[in-house]
Image 1: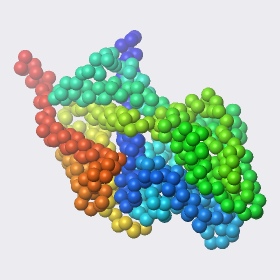
Image 2 (image 1 turned 180 degrees about the vertical axis):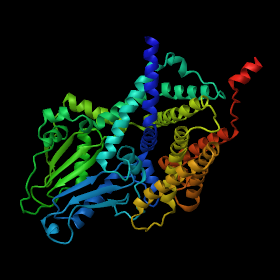
Image 3 (image 1 turned 120 degrees about the horizontal axis):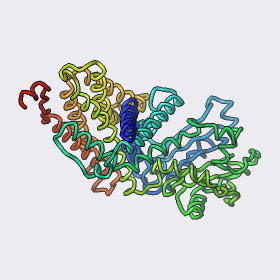
Image 4 (image 1 turned 135 degrees about the vertical axis):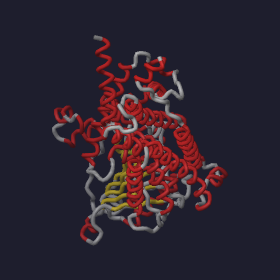
Length: 517
C-alpha cells in the first residue's frame, strides 16, 4: 500500500509539473529577474543621473506640482531611494482642469537633479515584475487566474515531490554526471532539495497575494462592503473638503524628516489632499524596504502648519500576517546580501522547473520503440521545452537589446520593447520546431550567451554608463547588472558547449542484449 501511494504521488508530481511547467518556468524566471527591478530600471535609462539625495528629488517634485497642478484635488508623490531611477508624481485634476482640455489623471517623472525627466521611454525591470503575475496581451483578471492556478499546481508538485523522494537528504549531496537520465534526475533533485524551503515559501506566499481573488468567501462573509476590507488593510485619516481659502503648502522635505524620525525608516509615498488650500492634508507612508510587512503605517499632517494630526492604528494579527506573507514573497524588505540569496534561490527554482521538463523527455525517450522517430506528443513537448527553457531567457535578453537599439524618440517606445521581445521569442519557438532538437538547443543557448556577453561591451562603447565607468564611480548597482549579465553569458556558453559535446549513450535492443549475454 505504501509503495502504491508513493507511486501515485510520483505520477501526480510528474503531471502536475508538466501540464503547467512552461508557464511556471516563465513566471519563475521573470519573477527572479524582478528581484533586481530597481537596478534594471536604472540600467534601462542610462541618461538619468544617479540619485544621491532623495530630498532634492522631493523638492523638485513639489516645485513641479506647484507649477503644473496648483489646483489639483490630490497629489501623489513617490519618494525615491538611492537605488531608484527617479521620482514619480501623479495628480487628480481639480474642477478647473476638468472643465478645460486637460481631463483625467496625469503623470510625470522627476530625475535626480529635481528636473522633469528627459530619457528614453521604457518599462525596464518593472516589466518583468508585472509580467510574472499579469502576463502580457491578456486581461489582467485572466492572467492572474492563470498564474494562480499554475501556482496551485506548483504547490501540489512540490508536496508530492517530497512524498516521492525516499532519500531526500541523500539527494541533496548526490550528482552523477554523464549518466543520461540519472544525471538529469540528480540535477533536478539537487535543485529541488537545495531550495526546498524557498520553493515552498515563494509558492505559498504567491498564492496568498492572490487570496481574495482565488478564495474570496472569507472576505465576502466578513466584509460585505468591499471598501470596508480596504479600510481595514489601509486605514486612512478622515477626508476633508476644499475650503476655498488659499494657503501656502508646508515644505514637504520638513515633513519627510519628521515622518522618517517617527517611523525609524524611510518614507516611500506622499499624498497631498487639497494642495494650496487652508485645509490641505499631507499623508506620508512608510517604505516597504527594511520592514517585513507590505502593509506599512502612515502619518497625516496639517498641510499648512505641519502639525501631526493622525497616525495609523496598530495593525491586527491578521493584517500583520497577510502583510508579512506578501512581504516575504516580494522580498522588498531584504538588504543586498539577502536579496542576492532570494535571486540565487530563484535561479535554482528556474533550474528545478527546467530540469523537470527536460527530464520528462529524457526519461521517455529511452522507452520509445524508435527514438529516432518519436510520436507527435513527444516531439511537441520536446520542442516546446526548447522554445521555453532556452528561448524565453534568450528573448528576455532581446528585450534588453531592444532597450538599447530602438530609436530614443520613438513613439510608444516602451511597448515596442515588449513587442520586440515577444516577436523574438516567437521566432525562437519556430526555430525550435524547424531544427533538430540537439542543434536547436546548442544554437539557442549559444545565442543567449553571445547576446549576454556582447551587451556590457556595447554599453561600454555606446553609453556613459558602461562597466569601466560604473566601477570607477563606485556605482555598484549598475556595475552589478553588467557583471551579472557577463556571468549568465558564461553560464549559457558553458551549457551550449556541454550540449554540443554530449555523446548520447548507445541504446541496445533487448535482442542484442540477449546475444551479448
